[in-house]
Image (tube, rainbow, N blue to C red; front, side, top):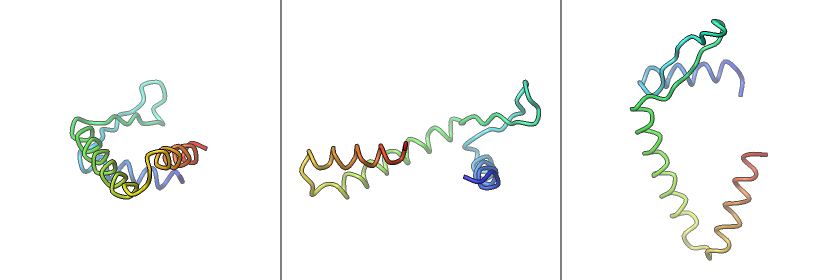
Amino acid sequence: MDRSDVVAAINELAEQGFVERTPDPDDRRRNMVTLTKAGDRQLRRMDRALDKVQDDLLGPLPAEDKQILTRLLTHHQRG
């Protein structure tokens, strides 16, 4: 991601109260970003929604195919 995109995303999350930004005590040019309680709750809601969408999307597949597809997608995201 481009630095300006990261800054814009952090700004939006901070405005919504999902993260707090504080100066890094070791390097004042940097900021430390911390998830707030509201941010943690929102993240959990999003995880549940994503799980439901994934279950709905992959529902028709046999269990073995779901596992293979999930593993391939997870590997692709990390790679």
